[in-house]
Image 1 (cartoon, rainbow over the protein chains, first blue to last red):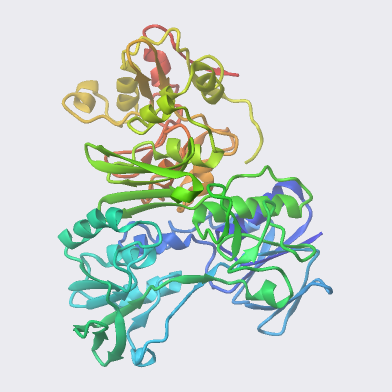
Image 2: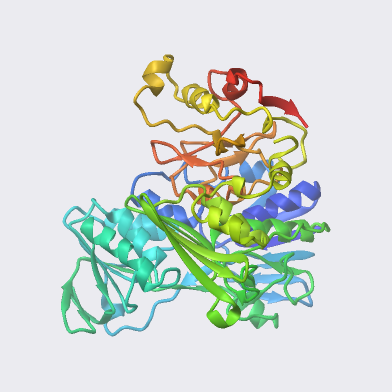
Length: 414
Length: 149
Protein backbone atom coordinates (compact mmCIF):
# COMPACT_ATOMS: atom_id res chain seq x y z
CA UNK A 1 0.00 0.00 0.00
CA UNK A 2 1.33 3.44 -0.96
CA UNK A 3 0.28 6.23 1.38
CA UNK A 4 0.90 9.78 0.28
CA UNK A 5 0.50 12.73 2.63
CA UNK A 6 0.56 16.29 1.34
CA UNK A 7 1.92 18.32 4.22
CA UNK A 8 4.34 17.87 7.08
CA UNK A 9 2.65 19.59 9.99
CA UNK A 10 0.83 18.19 13.00
CA UNK A 11 -2.04 16.64 11.02
CA UNK A 12 0.38 15.04 8.55
CA UNK A 13 2.67 13.61 11.22
CA UNK A 14 -0.26 12.34 13.31
CA UNK A 15 -1.64 10.69 10.18
CA UNK A 16 1.69 9.00 9.39
CA UNK A 17 1.98 7.71 12.98
CA UNK A 18 -1.52 6.27 12.93
CA UNK A 19 -0.90 4.56 9.60
CA UNK A 20 2.30 2.96 10.86
CA UNK A 21 0.58 1.66 14.00
CA UNK A 22 -1.65 -0.43 11.72
CA UNK A 23 0.45 -1.06 8.66
CA UNK A 24 4.04 -2.11 9.27
CA UNK A 25 4.95 -2.44 5.60
CA UNK A 26 3.10 0.27 3.70
CA UNK A 27 5.12 2.94 1.99
CA UNK A 28 4.53 6.37 3.56
CA UNK A 29 5.64 9.55 1.77
CA UNK A 30 5.16 13.12 2.97
CA UNK A 31 5.42 16.06 0.60
CA UNK A 32 6.67 19.03 2.59
CA UNK A 33 6.57 22.44 1.01
CA UNK A 34 8.55 23.89 3.91
CA UNK A 35 12.18 22.90 4.24
CA UNK A 36 11.90 22.08 7.95
CA UNK A 37 11.08 18.87 9.82
CA UNK A 38 7.65 19.01 11.46
CA UNK A 39 7.16 21.75 14.03
CA UNK A 40 4.01 23.12 15.50
CA UNK A 41 3.18 26.54 14.14
CA UNK A 42 1.80 28.03 17.37
CA UNK A 43 5.34 27.73 18.76
CA UNK A 44 6.74 30.47 16.57
CA UNK A 45 5.77 33.24 19.00
CA UNK A 46 7.62 31.36 21.75
CA UNK A 47 10.64 31.24 19.48
CA UNK A 48 10.59 35.04 19.23
CA UNK A 49 10.18 35.16 23.00
CA UNK A 50 13.15 32.77 23.39
CA UNK A 51 11.03 30.32 25.38
CA UNK A 52 11.91 27.66 22.87
CA UNK A 53 14.53 27.19 20.19
CA UNK A 54 14.65 25.50 16.82
CA UNK A 55 15.77 22.20 18.24
CA UNK A 56 13.24 22.07 21.08
CA UNK A 57 10.40 23.13 18.84
CA UNK A 58 10.69 20.04 16.67
CA UNK A 59 7.37 18.27 17.00
CA UNK A 60 9.06 14.89 17.03
CA UNK A 61 12.64 13.73 17.77
CA UNK A 62 15.26 14.13 15.03
CA UNK A 63 15.18 10.42 14.11
CA UNK A 64 11.39 10.37 13.92
CA UNK A 65 10.94 9.88 10.16
CA UNK A 66 13.65 7.26 10.00
CA UNK A 67 12.18 5.31 12.91
CA UNK A 68 8.71 5.52 11.42
CA UNK A 69 10.18 4.41 8.10
CA UNK A 70 8.61 7.17 6.09
CA UNK A 71 10.09 9.42 3.45
CA UNK A 72 9.83 13.20 3.43
CA UNK A 73 10.35 15.11 0.23
CA UNK A 74 11.24 18.64 1.22
CA UNK A 75 10.59 21.67 -0.93
CA UNK A 76 7.89 19.89 -2.91
CA UNK A 77 4.67 21.76 -3.52
CA UNK A 78 1.71 19.69 -4.69
CA UNK A 79 -0.19 21.45 -7.45
CA UNK A 80 -2.70 18.92 -8.71
CA UNK A 81 -4.58 15.82 -7.58
CA UNK A 82 -5.77 13.45 -10.32
CA UNK A 83 -8.31 11.32 -8.44
CA UNK A 84 -8.96 8.92 -11.33
CA UNK A 85 -5.28 8.21 -11.94
CA UNK A 86 -4.52 8.30 -8.17
CA UNK A 87 -1.61 10.66 -8.65
CA UNK A 88 -0.43 13.97 -7.28
CA UNK A 89 1.58 16.30 -9.49
CA UNK A 90 4.10 18.64 -7.87
CA UNK A 91 5.30 22.08 -8.91
CA UNK A 92 8.60 20.61 -10.11
CA UNK A 93 6.71 18.33 -12.50
CA UNK A 94 7.22 15.17 -10.50
CA UNK A 95 4.29 12.77 -10.31
CA UNK A 96 3.52 10.92 -7.08
CA UNK A 97 1.22 7.89 -7.26
CA UNK A 98 -0.87 6.85 -4.25
CA UNK A 99 -3.30 4.21 -3.12
CA UNK A 100 -4.50 6.42 -0.25
CA UNK A 101 -3.93 10.15 -0.06
CA UNK A 102 -4.17 12.53 2.88
CA UNK A 103 -4.35 16.25 2.20
CA UNK A 104 -2.94 18.11 5.19
CA UNK A 105 -2.07 21.37 3.50
CA UNK A 106 -2.91 23.69 6.38
CA UNK A 107 -3.82 27.30 5.82
CA UNK A 108 -2.32 30.41 4.28
CA UNK A 109 -2.40 33.99 5.42
CA UNK A 110 -5.03 36.21 3.94
CA UNK A 111 -3.53 39.59 3.10
CA UNK A 112 -6.11 42.24 2.19
CA UNK A 113 -5.28 44.59 -0.64
CA UNK A 114 -4.09 47.81 0.95
CA UNK A 115 -2.71 50.69 -1.07
CA UNK A 116 1.06 50.77 -0.98
CA UNK A 117 1.40 47.44 0.83
CA UNK A 118 3.46 45.86 -1.94
CA UNK A 119 5.97 48.68 -1.58
CA UNK A 120 6.64 48.01 2.13
CA UNK A 121 9.99 46.26 2.22
CA UNK A 122 10.08 45.43 5.93
CA UNK A 123 6.88 43.44 5.76
CA UNK A 124 6.40 40.10 7.49
CA UNK A 125 3.77 37.45 7.87
CA UNK A 126 3.51 35.42 11.07
CA UNK A 127 2.47 31.89 10.31
CA UNK A 128 5.50 29.82 9.45
CA UNK A 129 8.90 29.17 11.00
CA UNK A 130 10.51 31.07 8.14
CA UNK A 131 8.26 34.05 8.93
CA UNK A 132 9.39 33.94 12.55
CA UNK A 133 13.07 33.55 11.67
CA UNK A 134 12.89 36.54 9.35
CA UNK A 135 11.16 38.65 11.98
CA UNK A 136 13.58 37.45 14.65
CA UNK A 137 16.46 38.72 12.58
CA UNK A 138 14.82 42.00 11.67
CA UNK A 139 13.57 42.96 15.15
CA UNK A 140 16.00 45.36 16.78
CA UNK A 141 15.88 47.17 20.09
CA UNK A 142 15.01 50.37 18.31
CA UNK A 143 12.33 48.91 16.01
CA UNK A 144 8.85 50.35 15.96
CA UNK A 145 6.52 47.53 14.98
CA UNK A 146 3.06 47.84 13.49
CA UNK A 147 0.94 44.69 13.54
CA UNK A 148 -2.16 44.69 11.36
CA UNK A 149 -4.63 42.32 12.99
CA UNK A 150 -5.46 41.93 16.70
CA UNK A 151 -6.49 38.29 16.47
CA UNK A 152 -4.72 35.26 17.92
CA UNK A 153 -1.79 35.49 15.52
CA UNK A 154 -1.30 39.25 15.77
CA UNK A 155 -1.40 39.28 19.56
CA UNK A 156 0.90 36.26 19.95
CA UNK A 157 3.32 38.05 17.64
CA UNK A 158 3.07 41.13 19.86
CA UNK A 159 3.81 38.99 22.90
CA UNK A 160 6.80 37.40 21.18
CA UNK A 161 8.28 40.80 20.33
CA UNK A 162 7.41 42.43 23.66
CA UNK A 163 10.51 43.68 25.41
CA UNK A 164 12.67 43.18 22.32
CA UNK A 165 11.63 46.23 20.33
CA UNK A 166 11.02 49.92 20.98
CA UNK A 167 7.28 49.96 20.45
CA UNK A 168 4.43 47.73 19.32
CA UNK A 169 1.19 49.03 17.84
CA UNK A 170 -1.58 46.60 16.96
CA UNK A 171 -4.49 47.76 14.83
CA UNK A 172 -7.67 45.99 13.81
CA UNK A 173 -10.80 47.03 12.00
CA UNK A 174 -12.82 45.24 14.64
CA UNK A 175 -13.89 47.18 17.74
CA UNK A 176 -12.07 44.70 19.99
CA UNK A 177 -9.15 42.31 20.26
CA UNK A 178 -9.60 38.58 19.56
CA UNK A 179 -12.92 39.25 17.84
CA UNK A 180 -13.20 35.64 16.61
CA UNK A 181 -13.38 34.28 20.16
CA UNK A 182 -14.32 37.14 22.50
CA UNK A 183 -17.18 39.61 22.60
CA UNK A 184 -16.64 43.22 23.59
CA UNK A 185 -17.29 42.51 27.24
CA UNK A 186 -14.66 39.75 27.46
CA UNK A 187 -12.18 41.65 25.33
CA UNK A 188 -12.08 44.64 27.69
CA UNK A 189 -9.89 43.13 30.44
CA UNK A 190 -7.57 41.68 27.80
CA UNK A 191 -7.17 45.09 26.17
CA UNK A 192 -6.52 46.74 29.53
CA UNK A 193 -3.89 44.13 30.30
CA UNK A 194 -2.12 44.63 26.96
CA UNK A 195 -2.18 48.42 27.31
CA UNK A 196 -0.76 48.15 30.83
CA UNK A 197 2.12 46.17 29.30
CA UNK A 198 2.84 49.01 26.91
CA UNK A 199 1.25 47.66 23.76
CA UNK A 200 -0.66 50.30 21.86
CA UNK A 201 -4.00 49.21 20.45
CA UNK A 202 -5.80 50.96 17.62
CA UNK A 203 -9.20 49.31 17.43
CA UNK A 204 -11.99 50.03 15.01
CA UNK A 205 -9.24 51.43 12.87
CA UNK A 206 -6.89 49.94 10.34
CA UNK A 207 -4.32 50.87 7.74
CA UNK A 208 -5.78 52.17 4.48
CA UNK A 209 -2.48 53.03 2.82
CA UNK A 210 1.23 52.69 3.30
CA UNK A 211 3.91 55.22 2.48
CA UNK A 212 7.63 54.82 3.14
CA UNK A 213 7.97 54.69 6.92
CA UNK A 214 4.39 55.13 7.97
CA UNK A 215 0.84 53.86 7.62
CA UNK A 216 -2.20 56.06 7.19
CA UNK A 217 -5.13 54.78 9.18
CA UNK A 218 -8.83 54.91 8.38
CA UNK A 219 -9.19 57.51 11.14
CA UNK A 220 -6.63 59.67 9.36
CA UNK A 221 -3.82 59.31 11.88
CA UNK A 222 -0.34 58.34 10.75
CA UNK A 223 1.49 55.49 12.41
CA UNK A 224 5.24 55.48 11.80
CA UNK A 225 6.86 52.04 11.78
CA UNK A 226 10.08 50.21 10.95
CA UNK A 227 8.60 46.71 10.72
CA UNK A 228 5.16 45.73 9.51
CA UNK A 229 3.50 42.42 10.39
CA UNK A 230 0.32 41.44 8.57
CA UNK A 231 -1.81 39.06 10.63
CA UNK A 232 -5.30 39.68 9.35
CA UNK A 233 -6.41 36.08 9.06
CA UNK A 234 -5.86 32.72 7.45
CA UNK A 235 -7.68 30.68 4.85
CA UNK A 236 -7.78 26.90 4.50
CA UNK A 237 -5.67 25.55 1.65
CA UNK A 238 -8.52 23.66 0.03
CA UNK A 239 -7.74 24.40 -3.62
CA UNK A 240 -6.15 21.01 -4.44
CA UNK A 241 -9.30 19.11 -3.49
CA UNK A 242 -11.69 21.74 -4.80
CA UNK A 243 -10.01 21.75 -8.21
CA UNK A 244 -10.08 17.96 -8.30
CA UNK A 245 -13.85 18.10 -7.89
CA UNK A 246 -14.00 17.29 -4.18
CA UNK A 247 -16.65 18.79 -1.97
CA UNK A 248 -15.52 21.92 -0.15
CA UNK A 249 -17.05 24.75 1.81
CA UNK A 250 -14.51 27.23 3.10
CA UNK A 251 -12.40 24.20 3.89
CA UNK A 252 -12.30 20.65 2.54
CA UNK A 253 -15.43 18.86 3.71
CA UNK A 254 -14.53 15.77 5.76
CA UNK A 255 -16.37 13.26 7.90
CA UNK A 256 -15.24 11.94 11.28
CA UNK A 257 -12.75 9.59 9.63
CA UNK A 258 -11.28 12.39 7.52
CA UNK A 259 -12.85 11.13 4.28
CA UNK A 260 -13.38 13.67 1.52
CA UNK A 261 -15.94 13.16 -1.25
CA UNK A 262 -13.13 11.86 -3.51
CA UNK A 263 -12.34 8.13 -3.44
CA UNK A 264 -9.24 7.24 -1.39
CA UNK A 265 -8.64 10.91 -0.61
CA UNK A 266 -8.64 11.98 3.03
CA UNK A 267 -7.93 15.35 4.58
CA UNK A 268 -7.06 16.60 8.06
CA UNK A 269 -6.14 19.73 9.95
CA UNK A 270 -6.44 23.41 9.15
CA UNK A 271 -7.39 22.85 5.50
CA UNK A 272 -10.63 21.08 6.45
CA UNK A 273 -14.04 21.88 7.76
CA UNK A 274 -15.99 19.48 9.89
CA UNK A 275 -18.84 19.25 12.35
CA UNK A 276 -18.55 21.28 15.53
CA UNK A 277 -20.01 19.03 18.23
CA UNK A 278 -21.01 22.02 20.34
CA UNK A 279 -23.50 23.40 17.81
CA UNK A 280 -23.73 20.79 15.05
CA UNK A 281 -22.57 23.25 12.41
CA UNK A 282 -20.01 22.55 9.73
CA UNK A 283 -17.01 24.85 10.16
CA UNK A 284 -13.29 25.36 9.87
CA UNK A 285 -11.74 24.65 13.28
CA UNK A 286 -8.12 25.33 12.49
CA UNK A 287 -6.66 24.46 15.85
CA UNK A 288 -3.74 22.32 16.79
CA UNK A 289 -5.53 19.69 18.93
CA UNK A 290 -8.05 19.15 16.15
CA UNK A 291 -5.26 18.74 13.60
CA UNK A 292 -3.79 15.93 15.67
CA UNK A 293 -7.13 14.24 16.34
CA UNK A 294 -8.17 14.50 12.68
CA UNK A 295 -4.78 13.40 11.40
CA UNK A 296 -4.90 10.29 13.58
CA UNK A 297 -8.47 9.50 12.55
CA UNK A 298 -7.55 9.83 8.86
CA UNK A 299 -4.46 7.67 9.30
CA UNK A 300 -6.43 4.91 11.03
CA UNK A 301 -9.07 4.97 8.28
CA UNK A 302 -6.45 5.03 5.51
CA UNK A 303 -4.86 1.91 6.94
CA UNK A 304 -8.22 0.16 6.94
CA UNK A 305 -9.18 0.75 10.57
CA UNK A 306 -12.27 2.30 12.03
CA UNK A 307 -11.35 5.40 14.03
CA UNK A 308 -13.21 6.00 17.28
CA UNK A 309 -15.14 9.22 16.65
CA UNK A 310 -13.64 12.02 18.70
CA UNK A 311 -15.78 15.13 19.14
CA UNK A 312 -14.27 18.27 17.67
CA UNK A 313 -15.01 21.73 19.01
CA UNK A 314 -13.33 25.09 18.65
CA UNK A 315 -11.04 25.70 21.62
CA UNK A 316 -8.22 28.03 22.47
CA UNK A 317 -5.74 28.38 25.28
CA UNK A 318 -4.00 31.66 24.96
CA UNK A 319 -1.45 33.23 27.25
CA UNK A 320 -0.74 36.91 26.64
CA UNK A 321 2.02 38.44 28.73
CA UNK A 322 0.93 36.61 31.85
CA UNK A 323 -2.83 36.73 31.33
CA UNK A 324 -4.40 33.39 30.44
CA UNK A 325 -7.52 33.20 28.34
CA UNK A 326 -9.35 30.01 27.45
CA UNK A 327 -12.37 29.63 25.22
CA UNK A 328 -14.22 26.58 23.95
CA UNK A 329 -17.36 25.63 22.09
CA UNK A 330 -19.99 28.02 20.84
CA UNK A 331 -22.56 30.54 22.03
CA UNK A 332 -26.13 29.46 21.19
CA UNK A 333 -28.52 32.33 20.53
CA UNK A 334 -31.70 32.76 22.56
CA UNK A 335 -33.67 31.30 19.63
CA UNK A 336 -31.48 28.20 19.79
CA UNK A 337 -32.35 27.77 23.46
CA UNK A 338 -29.21 29.52 24.62
CA UNK A 339 -28.61 31.19 27.95
CA UNK A 340 -25.52 32.40 29.74
CA UNK A 341 -24.13 32.78 33.22
CA UNK A 342 -21.11 34.58 34.56
CA UNK A 343 -19.10 33.94 37.68
CA UNK A 344 -16.32 36.06 39.09
CA UNK A 345 -13.59 34.20 40.90
CA UNK A 346 -10.80 35.70 42.97
CA UNK A 347 -8.57 36.32 40.00
CA UNK A 348 -10.77 35.93 36.99
CA UNK A 349 -13.97 35.80 35.09
CA UNK A 350 -15.85 32.73 33.89
CA UNK A 351 -18.63 32.97 31.36
CA UNK A 352 -20.70 29.95 30.45
CA UNK A 353 -22.96 29.50 27.45
CA UNK A 354 -25.67 26.89 27.79
CA UNK A 355 -28.05 25.26 25.37
CA UNK A 356 -30.91 23.96 27.43
CA UNK A 357 -29.25 21.93 30.16
CA UNK A 358 -26.00 21.33 28.33
CA UNK A 359 -22.83 23.39 28.38
CA UNK A 360 -22.15 24.68 24.85
CA UNK A 361 -19.25 27.04 25.41
CA UNK A 362 -17.21 29.09 27.85
CA UNK A 363 -14.79 31.95 28.18
CA UNK A 364 -12.32 31.96 31.07
CA UNK A 365 -10.16 35.00 31.67
CA UNK A 366 -7.48 35.07 34.33
CA UNK A 367 -8.45 31.95 36.28
CA UNK A 368 -8.15 28.90 34.03
CA UNK A 369 -7.77 26.24 36.72
CA UNK A 370 -9.03 22.81 35.69
CA UNK A 371 -10.70 24.24 32.58
CA UNK A 372 -10.64 20.77 31.03
CA UNK A 373 -13.52 19.71 33.23
CA UNK A 374 -15.66 22.30 31.44
CA UNK A 375 -14.24 21.43 28.01
CA UNK A 376 -15.13 17.79 28.58
CA UNK A 377 -18.74 18.73 29.38
CA UNK A 378 -18.97 20.43 25.99
CA UNK A 379 -17.25 17.63 24.09
CA UNK A 380 -19.40 14.93 25.65
CA UNK A 381 -22.63 16.97 25.61
CA UNK A 382 -23.44 15.80 29.11
CA UNK A 383 -26.82 16.89 30.45
CA UNK A 384 -26.50 18.78 33.70
CA UNK A 385 -29.01 19.13 36.47
CA UNK A 386 -29.49 22.60 37.90
CA UNK A 387 -27.64 21.58 41.05
CA UNK A 388 -24.72 20.15 39.09
CA UNK A 389 -24.29 23.30 37.05
CA UNK A 390 -24.77 25.58 40.06
CA UNK A 391 -21.88 23.73 41.71
CA UNK A 392 -19.72 23.41 38.60
CA UNK A 393 -19.80 27.05 37.60
CA UNK A 394 -18.12 27.85 40.91
CA UNK A 395 -16.02 24.68 41.26
CA UNK A 396 -14.52 22.83 38.32
CA UNK A 397 -14.54 19.54 40.22
CA UNK A 398 -15.84 16.03 39.60
CA UNK A 399 -17.56 16.35 42.98
CA UNK A 400 -20.47 17.86 41.08
CA UNK A 401 -21.39 14.37 39.93
CA UNK A 402 -22.76 11.41 41.81
CA UNK A 403 -20.48 8.74 43.16
CA UNK A 404 -21.24 6.31 40.34
CA UNK A 405 -20.10 8.80 37.72
CA UNK A 406 -16.97 9.54 39.71
CA UNK A 407 -16.20 5.82 39.98
CA UNK A 408 -16.59 5.37 36.26
CA UNK A 409 -14.41 8.34 35.53
CA UNK A 410 -11.64 7.79 38.02
CA UNK A 411 -11.46 4.02 37.79
CA UNK A 412 -13.01 1.52 40.15
CA UNK A 413 -13.42 2.42 43.79
CA UNK A 414 -13.47 6.12 44.41
CA UNK B 1 3.02 3.81 21.75
CA UNK B 2 -0.61 2.80 21.57
CA UNK B 3 -2.48 0.04 23.27
CA UNK B 4 -4.60 -0.39 26.33
CA UNK B 5 -1.64 -1.32 28.39
CA UNK B 6 -2.33 -2.66 31.83
CA UNK B 7 -0.33 -0.50 34.12
CA UNK B 8 -0.24 0.40 37.75
CA UNK B 9 -2.04 3.62 38.50
CA UNK B 10 -2.98 5.59 41.58
CA UNK B 11 -6.54 4.99 42.79
CA UNK B 12 -8.30 6.55 45.72
CA UNK B 13 -10.98 4.89 47.83
CA UNK B 14 -13.56 7.51 48.66
CA UNK B 15 -14.79 5.44 51.62
CA UNK B 16 -11.39 5.63 53.30
CA UNK B 17 -10.21 9.10 52.31
CA UNK B 18 -10.19 11.34 55.38
CA UNK B 19 -9.71 14.51 53.36
CA UNK B 20 -6.50 15.23 55.32
CA UNK B 21 -4.63 16.58 52.26
CA UNK B 22 -1.40 14.86 53.33
CA UNK B 23 -1.10 13.38 49.84
CA UNK B 24 -0.92 16.89 48.42
CA UNK B 25 1.98 17.76 50.71
CA UNK B 26 3.81 14.49 50.04
CA UNK B 27 3.33 15.00 46.31
CA UNK B 28 4.53 18.58 46.36
CA UNK B 29 7.58 17.57 48.39
CA UNK B 30 8.40 14.59 46.16
CA UNK B 31 8.27 16.80 43.09
CA UNK B 32 10.03 19.81 44.59
CA UNK B 33 13.48 18.43 43.88
CA UNK B 34 14.47 19.38 47.43
CA UNK B 35 15.79 17.10 50.19
CA UNK B 36 14.18 18.84 53.12
CA UNK B 37 10.41 18.87 53.57
CA UNK B 38 10.42 22.05 55.64
CA UNK B 39 12.38 24.00 53.03
CA UNK B 40 10.16 22.60 50.31
CA UNK B 41 6.80 23.28 51.89
CA UNK B 42 6.85 25.63 54.87
CA UNK B 43 5.32 29.02 54.15
CA UNK B 44 5.32 28.29 50.43
CA UNK B 45 2.59 27.95 47.87
CA UNK B 46 2.55 24.28 46.97
CA UNK B 47 1.90 22.80 43.55
CA UNK B 48 0.77 19.21 44.08
CA UNK B 49 -0.22 16.93 41.20
CA UNK B 50 -2.84 15.17 43.28
CA UNK B 51 -5.70 17.16 44.67
CA UNK B 52 -8.23 16.38 47.36
CA UNK B 53 -11.76 17.34 46.53
CA UNK B 54 -14.40 17.17 49.18
CA UNK B 55 -16.62 18.91 51.66
CA UNK B 56 -16.22 17.07 54.93
CA UNK B 57 -18.86 14.48 54.11
CA UNK B 58 -17.14 12.99 51.09
CA UNK B 59 -13.59 13.38 49.99
CA UNK B 60 -11.28 11.79 47.47
CA UNK B 61 -8.21 12.78 45.52
CA UNK B 62 -7.77 13.24 41.79
CA UNK B 63 -4.59 12.77 39.84
CA UNK B 64 -3.63 11.92 36.25
CA UNK B 65 -5.35 8.80 34.89
CA UNK B 66 -2.59 8.15 32.32
CA UNK B 67 -5.33 7.74 29.70
CA UNK B 68 -4.96 5.18 26.91
CA UNK B 69 -5.63 7.88 24.32
CA UNK B 70 -4.58 10.99 26.22
CA UNK B 71 -6.11 14.17 24.86
CA UNK B 72 -3.40 16.22 26.60
CA UNK B 73 -0.79 14.45 24.47
CA UNK B 74 -2.84 14.96 21.32
CA UNK B 75 -3.29 18.64 22.14
CA UNK B 76 0.23 19.56 23.20
CA UNK B 77 1.55 22.16 20.78
CA UNK B 78 5.15 21.54 21.75
CA UNK B 79 5.32 17.76 21.64
CA UNK B 80 6.22 18.04 25.33
CA UNK B 81 3.40 15.87 26.66
CA UNK B 82 4.23 12.29 25.77
CA UNK B 83 2.76 8.84 26.27
CA UNK B 84 5.68 6.60 27.14
CA UNK B 85 6.15 2.93 26.34
CA UNK B 86 5.41 2.08 29.99
CA UNK B 87 2.01 3.75 29.69
CA UNK B 88 2.81 6.83 31.74
CA UNK B 89 2.01 10.28 30.43
CA UNK B 90 4.92 12.58 31.13
CA UNK B 91 5.75 16.17 30.35
CA UNK B 92 9.15 17.12 28.98
CA UNK B 93 9.57 20.46 30.72
CA UNK B 94 12.43 21.46 28.44
CA UNK B 95 10.01 21.49 25.51
CA UNK B 96 6.93 22.87 27.32
CA UNK B 97 6.24 26.56 26.69
CA UNK B 98 3.40 26.95 29.18
CA UNK B 99 0.56 27.45 26.70
CA UNK B 100 -1.66 25.36 29.01
CA UNK B 101 -3.63 23.70 26.23
CA UNK B 102 -3.27 20.53 28.34
CA UNK B 103 -5.10 22.30 31.17
CA UNK B 104 -7.81 23.26 28.69
CA UNK B 105 -8.41 19.66 27.64
CA UNK B 106 -7.74 17.36 30.62
CA UNK B 107 -11.17 16.01 31.62
CA UNK B 108 -9.94 15.39 35.17
CA UNK B 109 -8.37 18.77 35.82
CA UNK B 110 -5.20 16.80 36.53
CA UNK B 111 -2.67 19.00 34.74
CA UNK B 112 -1.64 22.05 36.75
CA UNK B 113 0.62 24.97 35.96
CA UNK B 114 3.62 24.99 38.28
CA UNK B 115 5.50 27.95 39.76
CA UNK B 116 7.48 28.10 36.50
CA UNK B 117 4.25 28.49 34.50
CA UNK B 118 4.89 25.15 32.81
CA UNK B 119 2.58 22.14 32.82
CA UNK B 120 2.97 19.78 35.74
CA UNK B 121 1.28 16.48 36.39
CA UNK B 122 1.46 13.17 38.22
CA UNK B 123 4.18 10.98 36.77
CA UNK B 124 3.70 8.35 39.46
CA UNK B 125 6.95 9.52 41.09
CA UNK B 126 8.81 7.36 38.57
CA UNK B 127 10.90 10.26 37.34
CA UNK B 128 11.66 11.90 40.69
CA UNK B 129 13.81 10.59 43.50
CA UNK B 130 10.84 9.02 45.27
CA UNK B 131 10.62 6.06 42.87
CA UNK B 132 7.05 5.09 43.75
CA UNK B 133 4.04 7.32 44.37
CA UNK B 134 4.64 9.45 47.46
CA UNK B 135 0.90 10.02 47.90
CA UNK B 136 0.37 6.28 48.31
CA UNK B 137 3.23 5.76 50.73
CA UNK B 138 2.16 8.67 52.90
CA UNK B 139 -1.58 8.05 53.04
CA UNK B 140 -2.37 7.48 56.74
CA UNK B 141 -5.57 5.57 56.08
CA UNK B 142 -4.36 3.64 53.03
CA UNK B 143 -7.10 5.21 50.98
CA UNK B 144 -4.70 5.65 48.07
CA UNK B 145 -3.42 2.55 46.33
CA UNK B 146 -1.02 1.94 43.49
CA UNK B 147 -2.13 -1.10 41.52
CA UNK B 148 -3.22 -2.60 38.22
CA UNK B 149 -6.94 -2.64 37.51
